[in-house]
Length: 449
Image (cartoon, rainbow, N blue to C red; front, side):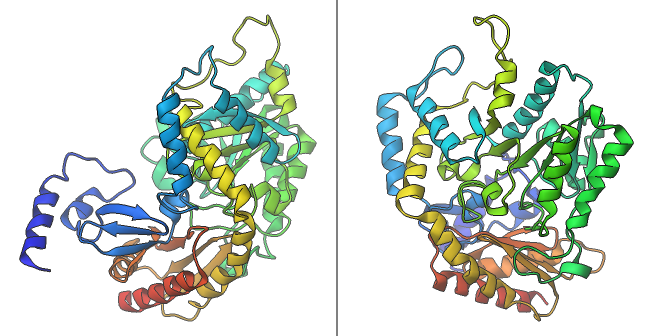
């Protein structure tokens, strides 16, 4: 590193302290900012302040599938800013927002045909939980107040999402603020039976039967909804076993429990389909979404619900508010414009088909890591994959951090959580870029061990 660059980094580091970074090791980052400050992005790549190019192995945070600075999205935002930059969502409406809801409903599984807009995945989950409670109350079943989540599930960081989520680190500091009466299904990742599975594991459908035990324990009349990610992304690409989601659907239907799919990661292309519900052949009662709906350009999320759920709220005087919930930025015109442009690209450029073509490329590339020292498991589904690493004794997370840093030095920007490395490359990736990503990760693993 030359003297001028070192001085620039030192000056940059001195100004890092005021920012409290989310989900980050703040002290470590601010002592080691080299290669980790991003200056610009285009296509499938970032560039650091040092001028180094990084392949965006996780599409931002699972959201920039069409690549950075997509010209059609940029043009749509410019036009929108010059037309309507903001419009109130309470008691007023913007036509583009209504059209977007219509387009999303048309893409959703049959029967899910009403859309409530929010700004993030966390808000979409908390909104879905409120809708579930309100729906049962409107149906005369106000005793249905319990939710069932899943171990290792991630449903955002709102108090509702944290409560139904199953990530211990996200929960342990805030137990007094969790929703009461929440129970959890076991997670579905058991390396003893499914290590190095390609796609959906054959073992594990029976784990859905745990919902029957939970129903017997609490009584179905007290349970409002079950919420799961079709594919658990934030926990490290935990893929549902064959038949597992179908069993959950059957049990929920039998007991009058709503089934919510958190598709913040799996929605709008990551699974090679509009939604994970389509990929796995299971129709829930609600779908939460965010991220890829507008390529991560402007915060936008939402909940898609069955017509019966929407209609349950449409009672009482016509002039009265039916659902006391919403946000200042619900259906924000700028976010909506980016979403329309994104859906245009998804439809006109055959993106879902491209993802399905790239899926076996990613599968072969990542499973080629099997046999590398310290690699305990590799798994994949759609355009997503992850591998687990043997941890450093008594220092969980350090091994993955070392692999991450070696990967950065090689020009790759993956995601690490605990001792798991996850990738979800952009939909625009080439087979050569995916192969290089895997080869660079292989070298990073060898360097870390």
